Length: 492
Image 1 (tube, rainbow, N blue to C red):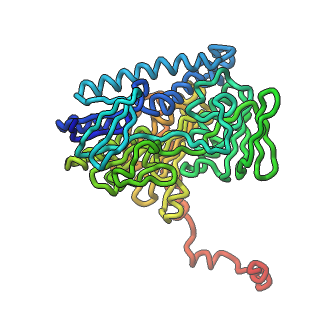
Image 2: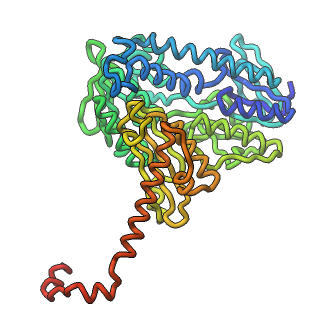
Image 3: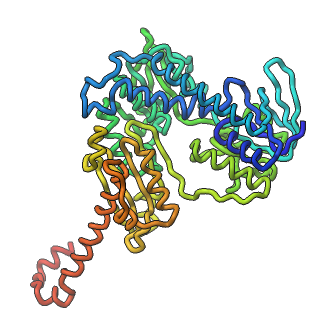
């Protein structure tokens, strides 16, 4: 079979790339390892299941409304894994049908089986029964995603020691959980289980978690996590794991500490799922974590082969992966691509975190003169209605041009309201827009107006202070000169 484009992987990047090529009247095939896995890791064990699980926990536990209604709002006294799985299965089934329908409507041929390169332009697809078909193609889009890292030193059993792909298969919610790895996945799942009353301990070799995020926002998240009883062991490495009696697990840390829990979630990294692709036959070599190098057009060093999604590394977001899929196809078939340079980032922790643009540490290192405007959710009527008294939104803007440089938010609907700031930034807007515009009331969008006034007030106060401050000559006349002895002491 001959195609203009063969896509390996049906996750967000592969889907959007395949559809974009079909819209250009190209003949397209997409390969997925298992029929029940159409939609990829994102749909079956990653983004969609974890976010659905999070919403189910928030709803059943009444967490979002505890400050308003107290324990009366709790939907279920004892929440089980079956409760969570039921909602996840409902959403996943619906989304899988949507994916398959979109592929069919765009005339994309679907193949089920293991894909492997026979040559730079040939891909063999081997079905479960051993039957194989070879696809010849002009272009290739590798969108195979990633899988959890599983070091041989970790005694995985899928029940007491498991990775993020296995978490939804647990028979019951554990009473205690040790999370190895304080990255996005580890923190998201750790806080979910802590919200259910599980005793959670997070172990990570770094001294600071989520280093790409604003430090104040991360500090606020850590405060929330600790209020749920979470314990953080930072700057610590795991050197051994033992199984104890009564289904207990003991973790030995390099510092000599010992942590004992009922279960362990290993969430310290993911690796590109490229082992079975026989990339060498296509002239490609992945890095030590199975990832592919690609340029700004998502093109590998083999010109007709492109890589998109998690398999190319950071930022490993479904939203960005979709954009990468479209970008790659447009470049492959010589079509113009007008992409977005201002990309948002969202973490579905409890509470949510979202950001766009630069953070304070980055602006400080770059010596950019900036000011900060802050709105606290307790000052916003809608924030009080939602029962969020601790969330906040902060805007960073240039002191001279007033251009918006970054927006950072933690709290209810953070991943939604961040897009207002993203839009204004993408259009080159200034903080004056938020001062002058009108938002519906009461809404969380009002945070932008409050933050704008807060930031502009700081500039106004500095102007007033500068105008009222005495000049240097006036200071010399009015300020008594210190005695020589005082000068010596001050110098010391």
